[in-house]
Amino acid sequence: MSPLILASGSKVRATLLANAGLDFAVRDSGVDEDAIKRVFRGPADENGTDALALELATAKALAVSNEEPDALVIGADQILSCDETRFDKPRDMGEARANLVRFRGRTHILHSGIVLAKSGAVLWSFSDRAHLTMRDFSADFLDWYLDTLGEKVRSSVGCYQLEGPGIQLFEKIEGDYFTILGLPLLPLLTELRRQGAARP
Image (tube, rainbow, N blue to C red):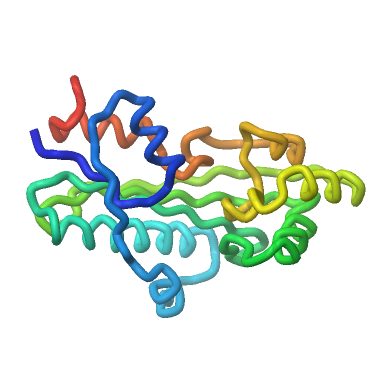
């Protein structure tokens, strides 16, 4: 059985794989995501953002696969879009507040891409979307939320974790929970079993 490597520094993704009972190593890909985003020429629509998430996931998987050719490498990435505008993690608390105001009362999309690579080649790829609608929360709630979480809101692109107070931001969520967390786990496990990297 080939060793399994997660090409990501994401603690959430590592926790998901560990909780699923997989034996794997973690290796940060070192990929310059901003450089890839700058040269990406796909459209700003949903399909284009899916493609960008997959391109980033592919770059991560191949960067590690080229260094570890005998391993099966998982690359993953997630992008948030709202009204065909793509968002990155907020640089400071002011940007976090501005982003949440932008998302308030609107539906945004989390685009998750995942890739498996071996010997410097892509074996499998998958993308999925989740649609999340924030309620029209009050200014007082926003103040409370930012004061309660502090700098933690900057750890995710949408400024929330659903398993915490962030769930209070929402009125409707459509999509797979694992896709929301940035790792579509069920299709990944299916492919890992097909590759002999998980118990059948």
